[in-house]
Length: 476
Image (cartoon, rainbow, N blue to C red; front, side):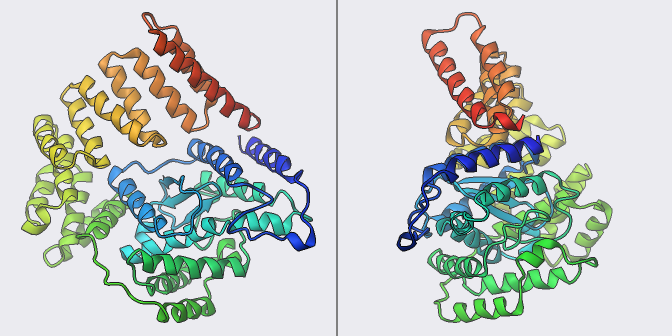
């Protein structure tokens, strides 16, 4: 599949390289337009790449994490110079510190970035930087500047990023940052593009209510982290160095910008960091001991202790740890959802459903609440109702592969065979498995008692999947 991916991306860019060359006095301002790649071409190429990425690298499924990052992404995007706001977030299941953006509005964030950024503002600086690369269309600029010698540069960029992301051991070993792509996957922006992304990203941070100094703080943290690798400096830090000069430039720019009155969102970021920390720990017992030492004085560590005990399936101790949290924190949505997660894990399905019914009334539009509500309904054998909840989520978040996967499983439990085939076809389409998607549609068309509207919908979807398969046929 990897060799096929490169063939596809090269073929895609070959079709673009036939565009007539620019005259000397017609050099474009890529931030506004590009004679090489249109916004729509970027969008289509990016979505194809996103499907292949999902099919090659595991996604991070925690709806709290995904929902939080998605909200932060859109908050900053609203204050960016993006011309095309059709963004698509992919959160990857890896502790490696990295983020990247791909033409067409695809933004990839490794879950491990939450461990590297110490607070929400540092995390936001990474997203702001990546969105600035997209808004200024730096990938198209690279292609334009390199077309005489390497007209297929963008294809190589996309292919190499995917290869590194898909191979967690070889391609993502070590520490990386949003300003540095993974091993063998360097985007290799010019220094000018990096400086521009720093400058514009910082301005967008301020416009979004964040401290501009968060960006140089993040740079400094990355620089310090690179000193503890203990091996040869990885290629991603060689191609995108976080230098003293870059840090100084960022600090100088920050000093010229206002510092908004930042208001953290009620512990959200720090609570989520504990979820990621517990998820990725390779020494759960030691982590519990560490939390025990600080839990009495630090309520965030106390929450981490509850999560770690839950992961160890020590349900009684986990519940005690949750109940020991201060009353102000007890009312936080994340804590209330954790109580429901604990009840489900402990086999207290009715308690979990009762809790989730209350939360669903309070937060009817919350993705993590709806997702956990569906789980509680399924645990109580209310499969048809759970499928309705997930079906509504799939309409709101059509590119979320986890929702489609869970919907297919739940429709099966509810006995809705047609629903199973349709949900599976959408899941396979999102993960680039177009042949499997077509098979599911064919199975659905064989179902008895289909209405005319059912048949028309399925046949239209089949044509769409065939179109996508044609785009990526060389990858299989």
